[in-house]
Image (cartoon, rainbow, N blue to C red; front, top):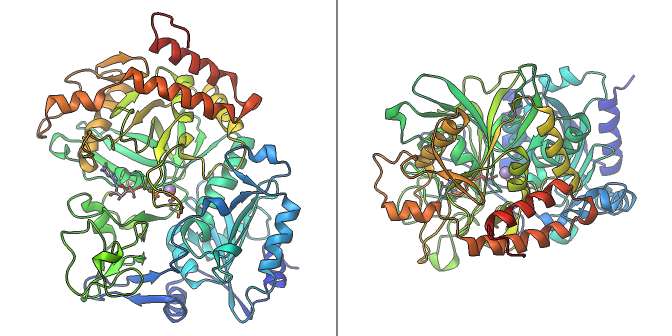
Length: 585
Ligand code: GTP
Ligand code: SPV
Ligand code: MN
């Protein structure tokens, strides 16, 4: 008798009609075979075997270099269940439309059946999935990003407790590209892209869009958050989760090289992109990293900004859309000084500075998590790690101070729900436009965000020891367009203040938007920064915030009656705090 897993793969193959089906076991021998197929079938090369052993460069189609949010759909039964921040398609219509594109899409190709687990194999918080795909590049990446193969087959066995995902690169034509999620069925169909979050279905499609729906139904949380442990001089490690939008610094914060290491402060990495969290018996929210690798942004990463990331990607790494030196080493803007002669750009052409950057701005590396020098000894702990602080943040050239603390959980949910950030190259479209991106989840929430805010509010009531909620902004600029804060390893100074606030120490100054560090509360020794710049970083300008109030109100109106009333209350509270004289607004 066929198992539900076998039956589903059989069904997928009836639709896509591959020449053969290969069930992946995850072994090293199989991996080498699949990399061989990747090198044969796509624009991929082996990098310098001496300096970058077992590393490869894959060049994707130039029209397929980032997530495509306008082609991503939540196919819930009703449009209202997808909500105003998602694209919606009727599930039947989606099956019909994508079905036509998937019909025979794997003719003459191999279908790889990739069973996988999101989370440590022995964790009760983990979940299983299967991805069938016709892309060897996707298989090789899934092997790094998830626990793939036999371990997942053993777990799934004859059960039907897995999330199925059907992926075909199709013809890579963006007019025939769709990433569709069926939340009621817990099903994913993706066609027409071979890139990142569009194609590695365990990541954004399952671990965020489908998992967010499951989490709400089952009383847990699936968030676009890094997980880090901050070690203090006494050796105690405090865990924090931070939600920043795509390409806004999660990987760099999670893997940071602390500039306060000489004072005993050190950062340990548990995860860099996604957190699954459940309330544990100790009354804390416990987090696991559902992923097994990092799919990190390359540009901007160098020995000066992040030695840990650079150390991690020296072996067993797949680079995507980076440039290559004549020595066949990977190269990108920010890696280490000026480009050398003879550089090949990400499109496999001789580099010509007049034709743009050598590496694509969303070029990435796929690295096994355990290769990071900063990996936490508890990163695979079955019970997860207890979270003491949540940190929201984004890219704001203006308005948002370096760091502030919310007054309480409900206010913290308002801070997360009203987050805004300048758009980045992680998704196609304009870069640098400020948009509201609540909890960094706008591209990843699988249901109506008004209900998602309601879920956050409800969780706060259920967690006996809820994390304190903070907001940071590493990207505030001076009027001449320069970053005011050096960022990267210096961000540990902000984490140290957050830790002190969590422990009831650390002095703060109350502002209408929350608590900012009191003068002198932020440890700045060993750093050259003018006191006036620190004041600029902390400034809460009432005029800017009055404009925020207007923008937030407009954003909230999208959700109409479905928005929890607590958020209206918080909007009124902020409005009142900004106008202590009681001027009506
Ligand atoms: P996703 O993988 O898309 O979710 O991105 P992420 O949030 O993990 O962002 P990542 O850490 O990869 O950083 C994105 C870009 O921001 C890179 O070019 C970094 O070099 C840059 N960056 C990260 N942290 C800082 C910082 O503290 N200051 C400044 N100025 N830039 C930063
Ligand atoms: C993001 O865009 O938030 C990423 C990269 O982490 S991708 O996997 O392409 O979604
Ligand atoms: Mn991300």
